[in-house]
Image (cartoon, rainbow, N blue to C red; front, side, top):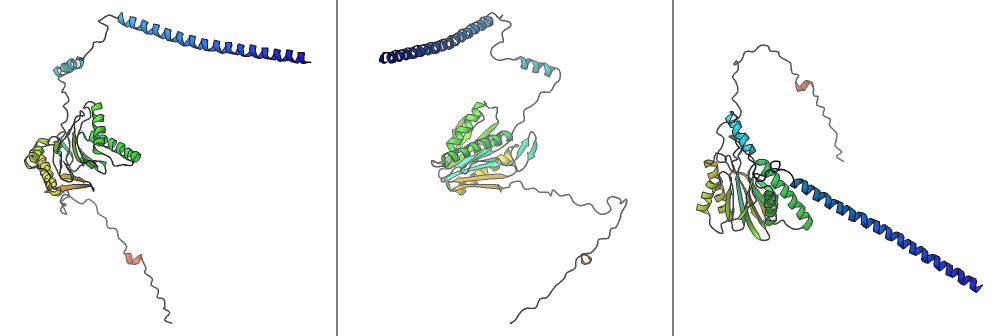
Length: 332
Protein backbone atom coordinates (compact mmCIF):
# COMPACT_ATOMS: atom_id res chain seq x y z
CA UNK A 1 0.00 0.00 0.00
CA UNK A 2 2.73 2.45 0.86
CA UNK A 3 4.46 1.86 -2.47
CA UNK A 4 1.23 2.37 -4.43
CA UNK A 5 0.52 5.64 -2.62
CA UNK A 6 4.04 6.88 -3.37
CA UNK A 7 3.64 5.99 -7.06
CA UNK A 8 0.35 7.90 -7.27
CA UNK A 9 1.86 10.93 -5.52
CA UNK A 10 4.79 10.88 -7.91
CA UNK A 11 2.51 10.68 -10.94
CA UNK A 12 0.47 13.64 -9.65
CA UNK A 13 3.60 15.74 -9.23
CA UNK A 14 4.72 14.83 -12.73
CA UNK A 15 1.37 15.88 -14.21
CA UNK A 16 1.50 19.19 -12.36
CA UNK A 17 5.00 19.84 -13.62
CA UNK A 18 4.12 19.16 -17.24
CA UNK A 19 0.91 21.23 -16.89
CA UNK A 20 2.71 24.37 -15.65
CA UNK A 21 5.53 23.94 -18.17
CA UNK A 22 3.00 23.74 -21.02
CA UNK A 23 1.17 26.82 -19.72
CA UNK A 24 4.38 28.84 -19.54
CA UNK A 25 5.24 27.86 -23.10
CA UNK A 26 1.81 29.05 -24.30
CA UNK A 27 2.20 32.35 -22.48
CA UNK A 28 5.64 32.84 -23.96
CA UNK A 29 4.29 32.20 -27.46
CA UNK A 30 1.52 34.80 -26.95
CA UNK A 31 4.01 37.40 -25.72
CA UNK A 32 6.37 36.62 -28.60
CA UNK A 33 3.57 36.99 -31.17
CA UNK A 34 2.48 40.31 -29.63
CA UNK A 35 6.02 41.73 -29.72
CA UNK A 36 6.51 40.49 -33.27
CA UNK A 37 3.40 42.25 -34.56
CA UNK A 38 4.32 45.48 -32.74
CA UNK A 39 7.81 45.44 -34.22
CA UNK A 40 6.45 44.62 -37.67
CA UNK A 41 4.00 47.55 -37.52
CA UNK A 42 6.76 49.93 -36.45
CA UNK A 43 9.04 48.83 -39.29
CA UNK A 44 6.19 49.11 -41.80
CA UNK A 45 5.35 52.64 -40.62
CA UNK A 46 8.97 53.73 -41.00
CA UNK A 47 9.08 52.32 -44.52
CA UNK A 48 5.92 54.20 -45.44
CA UNK A 49 7.26 57.48 -44.07
CA UNK A 50 10.53 57.02 -45.99
CA UNK A 51 8.55 56.29 -49.17
CA UNK A 52 6.47 59.45 -48.68
CA UNK A 53 9.61 61.55 -48.18
CA UNK A 54 11.12 60.12 -51.35
CA UNK A 55 7.97 60.93 -53.31
CA UNK A 56 7.94 64.49 -51.98
CA UNK A 57 11.61 64.89 -52.83
CA UNK A 58 11.02 63.73 -56.39
CA UNK A 59 8.48 66.49 -57.06
CA UNK A 60 9.51 69.15 -59.52
CA UNK A 61 10.45 72.57 -58.17
CA UNK A 62 7.70 74.16 -60.26
CA UNK A 63 5.07 71.97 -58.61
CA UNK A 64 6.10 72.84 -55.08
CA UNK A 65 4.21 75.50 -53.14
CA UNK A 66 6.30 78.67 -52.83
CA UNK A 67 7.45 79.56 -49.34
CA UNK A 68 7.14 82.95 -47.63
CA UNK A 69 4.63 85.71 -48.41
CA UNK A 70 2.11 85.25 -51.18
CA UNK A 71 1.30 88.45 -53.10
CA UNK A 72 -1.27 86.94 -55.47
CA UNK A 73 -4.12 88.77 -53.72
CA UNK A 74 -2.27 92.07 -54.02
CA UNK A 75 -1.99 91.61 -57.77
CA UNK A 76 -5.66 90.72 -57.94
CA UNK A 77 -6.65 93.81 -55.96
CA UNK A 78 -4.55 96.05 -58.22
CA UNK A 79 -6.23 94.58 -61.29
CA UNK A 80 -9.70 95.07 -59.74
CA UNK A 81 -8.89 98.72 -58.96
CA UNK A 82 -7.85 99.29 -62.57
CA UNK A 83 -11.19 97.82 -63.65
CA UNK A 84 -13.00 100.47 -61.59
CA UNK A 85 -13.81 98.56 -58.37
CA UNK A 86 -13.77 100.73 -55.27
CA UNK A 87 -11.84 99.19 -52.43
CA UNK A 88 -13.33 98.91 -48.97
CA UNK A 89 -12.07 101.39 -46.43
CA UNK A 90 -11.68 100.35 -42.79
CA UNK A 91 -13.86 102.11 -40.27
CA UNK A 92 -12.08 104.28 -37.76
CA UNK A 93 -13.20 103.82 -34.17
CA UNK A 94 -13.47 106.79 -31.83
CA UNK A 95 -13.17 106.81 -28.04
CA UNK A 96 -11.51 108.66 -25.18
CA UNK A 97 -10.70 106.55 -22.11
CA UNK A 98 -8.25 107.30 -19.35
CA UNK A 99 -7.31 106.55 -15.76
CA UNK A 100 -5.24 107.97 -12.92
CA UNK A 101 -3.94 106.66 -9.61
CA UNK A 102 -4.58 108.80 -6.53
CA UNK A 103 -3.69 108.39 -2.88
CA UNK A 104 -6.29 105.77 -1.94
CA UNK A 105 -7.30 104.19 -5.25
CA UNK A 106 -7.90 104.58 -8.98
CA UNK A 107 -10.23 106.75 -11.07
CA UNK A 108 -11.27 105.57 -14.54
CA UNK A 109 -13.04 107.74 -17.09
CA UNK A 110 -14.68 107.36 -20.50
CA UNK A 111 -16.93 109.17 -22.92
CA UNK A 112 -20.27 107.72 -24.06
CA UNK A 113 -20.28 108.13 -27.87
CA UNK A 114 -20.40 105.01 -30.07
CA UNK A 115 -19.67 105.50 -33.77
CA UNK A 116 -20.24 103.43 -36.90
CA UNK A 117 -17.91 105.05 -39.41
CA UNK A 118 -19.11 108.63 -39.81
CA UNK A 119 -22.41 107.96 -38.02
CA UNK A 120 -23.10 108.24 -34.29
CA UNK A 121 -24.60 104.86 -33.42
CA UNK A 122 -25.21 105.43 -29.69
CA UNK A 123 -25.00 108.67 -27.73
CA UNK A 124 -24.96 107.16 -24.26
CA UNK A 125 -23.17 103.79 -24.33
CA UNK A 126 -21.12 102.25 -21.51
CA UNK A 127 -17.38 101.90 -22.05
CA UNK A 128 -16.37 101.02 -18.48
CA UNK A 129 -16.78 97.27 -18.06
CA UNK A 130 -17.06 95.22 -14.88
CA UNK A 131 -14.25 92.72 -14.29
CA UNK A 132 -14.48 92.02 -10.56
CA UNK A 133 -15.90 93.85 -7.53
CA UNK A 134 -12.52 95.57 -7.13
CA UNK A 135 -11.47 95.72 -10.81
CA UNK A 136 -12.93 97.65 -13.78
CA UNK A 137 -11.74 98.04 -17.36
CA UNK A 138 -12.27 100.78 -19.98
CA UNK A 139 -12.46 99.60 -23.59
CA UNK A 140 -11.62 101.37 -26.86
CA UNK A 141 -11.88 99.86 -30.32
CA UNK A 142 -14.56 97.55 -31.69
CA UNK A 143 -17.50 97.38 -29.30
CA UNK A 144 -18.07 93.65 -29.81
CA UNK A 145 -14.41 92.83 -29.11
CA UNK A 146 -14.15 94.93 -25.95
CA UNK A 147 -17.44 93.67 -24.50
CA UNK A 148 -16.80 89.99 -25.20
CA UNK A 149 -13.15 89.97 -24.12
CA UNK A 150 -13.87 91.72 -20.82
CA UNK A 151 -16.93 89.52 -20.23
CA UNK A 152 -14.95 86.34 -20.83
CA UNK A 153 -12.11 87.37 -18.49
CA UNK A 154 -14.66 88.50 -15.90
CA UNK A 155 -16.24 85.03 -15.86
CA UNK A 156 -12.80 83.41 -15.47
CA UNK A 157 -12.01 85.69 -12.53
CA UNK A 158 -15.32 84.79 -10.89
CA UNK A 159 -14.58 81.06 -11.22
CA UNK A 160 -11.12 81.72 -9.78
CA UNK A 161 -12.67 83.48 -6.78
CA UNK A 162 -15.03 80.55 -6.21
CA UNK A 163 -12.10 78.15 -6.42
CA UNK A 164 -9.69 79.99 -4.13
CA UNK A 165 -12.10 81.90 -1.91
CA UNK A 166 -9.97 85.02 -2.21
CA UNK A 167 -10.28 88.43 -3.83
CA UNK A 168 -9.21 88.75 -7.46
CA UNK A 169 -5.90 90.49 -8.07
CA UNK A 170 -5.39 93.07 -10.79
CA UNK A 171 -2.28 91.34 -12.14
CA UNK A 172 -4.32 88.16 -12.65
CA UNK A 173 -6.80 89.91 -14.90
CA UNK A 174 -3.91 91.67 -16.68
CA UNK A 175 -2.23 88.33 -17.45
CA UNK A 176 -5.44 86.81 -18.79
CA UNK A 177 -6.17 89.82 -20.99
CA UNK A 178 -2.73 90.20 -22.56
CA UNK A 179 -2.37 86.44 -23.12
CA UNK A 180 -5.68 86.30 -24.96
CA UNK A 181 -4.93 89.37 -27.10
CA UNK A 182 -1.39 88.21 -27.95
CA UNK A 183 -2.77 84.87 -29.11
CA UNK A 184 -4.72 86.65 -31.86
CA UNK A 185 -1.86 88.96 -32.92
CA UNK A 186 -3.87 92.19 -32.88
CA UNK A 187 -6.89 90.95 -34.85
CA UNK A 188 -9.03 91.59 -31.76
CA UNK A 189 -9.54 95.35 -31.78
CA UNK A 190 -9.51 95.98 -28.04
CA UNK A 191 -7.37 98.71 -26.44
CA UNK A 192 -7.96 98.59 -22.69
CA UNK A 193 -7.27 100.62 -19.57
CA UNK A 194 -7.36 98.31 -16.56
CA UNK A 195 -7.60 99.62 -13.02
CA UNK A 196 -8.28 98.19 -9.59
CA UNK A 197 -7.31 97.92 -5.95
CA UNK A 198 -6.23 94.65 -4.31
CA UNK A 199 -4.08 93.47 -1.42
CA UNK A 200 -1.02 95.11 -3.02
CA UNK A 201 -2.65 98.54 -3.38
CA UNK A 202 -3.98 100.51 -6.39
CA UNK A 203 -2.92 99.47 -9.90
CA UNK A 204 -3.37 100.98 -13.37
CA UNK A 205 -2.39 99.27 -16.63
CA UNK A 206 -2.82 99.79 -20.36
CA UNK A 207 -3.30 96.76 -22.62
CA UNK A 208 -2.74 97.20 -26.35
CA UNK A 209 -4.49 95.05 -28.99
CA UNK A 210 -1.29 93.08 -29.72
CA UNK A 211 -0.85 92.11 -26.05
CA UNK A 212 1.76 94.62 -24.86
CA UNK A 213 1.14 96.29 -21.50
CA UNK A 214 2.30 99.32 -19.50
CA UNK A 215 2.03 100.18 -15.81
CA UNK A 216 1.69 103.95 -15.36
CA UNK A 217 0.40 106.45 -12.78
CA UNK A 218 -1.92 107.91 -15.46
CA UNK A 219 -2.72 106.76 -18.98
CA UNK A 220 -5.05 107.42 -21.92
CA UNK A 221 -6.25 105.35 -24.88
CA UNK A 222 -8.43 105.85 -27.94
CA UNK A 223 -8.67 108.41 -30.71
CA UNK A 224 -8.91 111.25 -28.18
CA UNK A 225 -5.98 110.02 -26.10
CA UNK A 226 -3.63 112.87 -27.07
CA UNK A 227 -6.10 115.50 -25.89
CA UNK A 228 -6.66 113.71 -22.59
CA UNK A 229 -2.93 113.13 -22.13
CA UNK A 230 -2.27 116.87 -22.47
CA UNK A 231 -4.63 117.53 -19.54
CA UNK A 232 -3.06 114.78 -17.43
CA UNK A 233 0.51 115.92 -18.02
CA UNK A 234 -0.33 119.49 -17.11
CA UNK A 235 -2.41 118.74 -14.00
CA UNK A 236 -1.13 115.47 -12.50
CA UNK A 237 0.61 115.40 -9.14
CA UNK A 238 1.45 112.65 -6.69
CA UNK A 239 -0.78 111.74 -3.73
CA UNK A 240 -3.86 113.45 -5.12
CA UNK A 241 -7.10 113.28 -3.21
CA UNK A 242 -10.18 111.54 -4.55
CA UNK A 243 -11.87 114.82 -5.50
CA UNK A 244 -8.78 116.12 -7.31
CA UNK A 245 -8.40 112.88 -9.29
CA UNK A 246 -12.07 112.91 -10.27
CA UNK A 247 -11.92 116.53 -11.42
CA UNK A 248 -8.72 115.93 -13.41
CA UNK A 249 -10.17 112.85 -15.13
CA UNK A 250 -13.35 114.75 -15.90
CA UNK A 251 -11.35 117.51 -17.56
CA UNK A 252 -9.34 114.95 -19.57
CA UNK A 253 -12.49 113.32 -20.95
CA UNK A 254 -14.01 116.72 -21.75
CA UNK A 255 -10.85 117.56 -23.74
CA UNK A 256 -11.38 114.42 -25.81
CA UNK A 257 -15.08 115.16 -26.28
CA UNK A 258 -14.53 118.71 -27.55
CA UNK A 259 -11.42 118.07 -29.68
CA UNK A 260 -11.98 114.57 -31.13
CA UNK A 261 -14.77 113.86 -33.61
CA UNK A 262 -14.97 110.21 -32.56
CA UNK A 263 -15.62 111.10 -28.90
CA UNK A 264 -18.59 112.91 -27.49
CA UNK A 265 -21.75 113.02 -25.41
CA UNK A 266 -21.28 112.53 -21.65
CA UNK A 267 -18.61 111.64 -19.08
CA UNK A 268 -18.61 108.41 -17.05
CA UNK A 269 -16.35 107.87 -14.04
CA UNK A 270 -15.53 104.84 -11.91
CA UNK A 271 -13.83 105.36 -8.54
CA UNK A 272 -12.20 102.24 -7.05
CA UNK A 273 -10.89 102.18 -3.50
CA UNK A 274 -10.22 99.54 -0.86
CA UNK A 275 -13.82 99.97 0.34
CA UNK A 276 -15.29 99.13 -3.07
CA UNK A 277 -16.08 100.58 -6.49
CA UNK A 278 -18.44 103.43 -7.35
CA UNK A 279 -19.66 103.70 -10.95
CA UNK A 280 -20.78 107.29 -11.64
CA UNK A 281 -22.90 107.26 -14.79
CA UNK A 282 -23.25 110.54 -16.71
CA UNK A 283 -21.55 112.53 -13.98
CA UNK A 284 -20.91 115.34 -16.46
CA UNK A 285 -23.02 116.25 -19.51
CA UNK A 286 -21.10 118.93 -21.43
CA UNK A 287 -23.35 118.69 -24.50
CA UNK A 288 -26.95 119.09 -23.33
CA UNK A 289 -29.71 118.81 -25.91
CA UNK A 290 -31.05 122.21 -26.85
CA UNK A 291 -34.13 120.89 -28.65
CA UNK A 292 -37.00 118.64 -27.76
CA UNK A 293 -37.44 115.27 -29.42
CA UNK A 294 -41.27 115.57 -29.41
CA UNK A 295 -42.52 117.52 -32.49
CA UNK A 296 -44.90 120.42 -32.02
CA UNK A 297 -48.58 119.42 -32.42
CA UNK A 298 -50.36 120.37 -35.65
CA UNK A 299 -53.05 123.00 -35.51
CA UNK A 300 -56.64 121.95 -35.94
CA UNK A 301 -57.61 122.30 -39.57
CA UNK A 302 -54.17 121.64 -41.04
CA UNK A 303 -55.54 118.57 -42.81
CA UNK A 304 -59.09 118.13 -44.14
CA UNK A 305 -61.54 115.89 -42.25
CA UNK A 306 -63.03 113.30 -44.62
CA UNK A 307 -65.36 111.54 -42.19
CA UNK A 308 -66.30 111.86 -38.54
CA UNK A 309 -68.49 109.87 -36.17
CA UNK A 310 -69.42 110.55 -32.57
CA UNK A 311 -69.68 107.58 -30.23
CA UNK A 312 -71.50 108.01 -26.90
CA UNK A 313 -69.41 107.10 -23.89
CA UNK A 314 -71.43 105.89 -20.87
CA UNK A 315 -70.68 107.59 -17.61
CA UNK A 316 -69.31 105.75 -14.64
CA UNK A 317 -72.37 106.59 -12.51
CA UNK A 318 -74.60 104.40 -14.67
CA UNK A 319 -72.22 101.44 -14.46
CA UNK A 320 -71.00 101.52 -10.86
CA UNK A 321 -73.33 101.37 -7.84
CA UNK A 322 -71.94 102.07 -4.43
CA UNK A 323 -73.58 100.26 -1.50
CA UNK A 324 -72.88 101.31 2.05
CA UNK A 325 -73.92 99.23 5.02
CA UNK A 326 -73.89 100.51 8.57
CA UNK A 327 -73.36 98.12 11.46
CA UNK A 328 -74.33 98.93 15.02
CA UNK A 329 -71.53 98.95 17.54
CA UNK A 330 -71.93 97.13 20.82
CA UNK A 331 -71.42 99.81 23.48
CA UNK A 332 -71.97 97.49 26.42
